[in-house]
Structures are given as structure tokens and as C-alpha cells.
Length: 100
View (cartoon, rainbow, N blue to C red):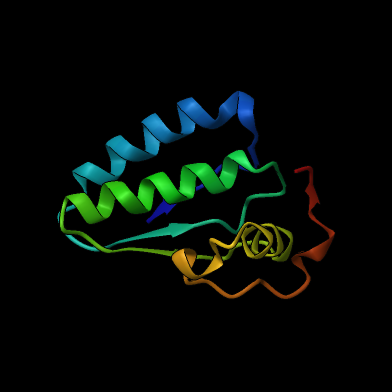
């Protein structure tokens, strides 16, 4: 299972995308990305998730994302990309610190 880091802001986005993209390409089939550790993020976290989804689709793979914080789902809904993530918010995660 792949995992997002606790902090994913603009400063970490490129490295996170590179590392997770490499790990994703090494997975033989469908992959699961756990976002439950994510506590500090900005809209760059959505960009990383969407690019990982595109990378998976281009490779003919499925990427399931689980454990997205409620605040990140709210941000995804605000930007109109929530259906692309296919994830329900985690109960109690609304207190995660997020900046848009």
C-alpha cells in the first residue's frame, strides 16, 4: 500500500509526486493509496492525487485512494474534482490543518 506523507504542500509536492509515481509504476496491478496520515496540506495535495490518478489511468491501472481528510474532500468539492477522487471523508478528520 502506498502512503501520503503527513505534510503535503507546494514545497513537498514535486518530490512526493516523483516518489509515489515511481512506487505506483512498480505496482503490478491495482494500487491503494492511504491518505490517513495527511494532516497538513494545501491545494497541491489535490494536484498530486489527480496526477497519480492520471498516471494510473495511462498505465491501464486503477488507483484507489482511502482515508482522505474531510478538509481535503471539502477542498476537492470546492474545486469540482471530488468525483475524480472517489473517496468519502474520514470521520473526525475535520480538525486537520489545511490551507488553500
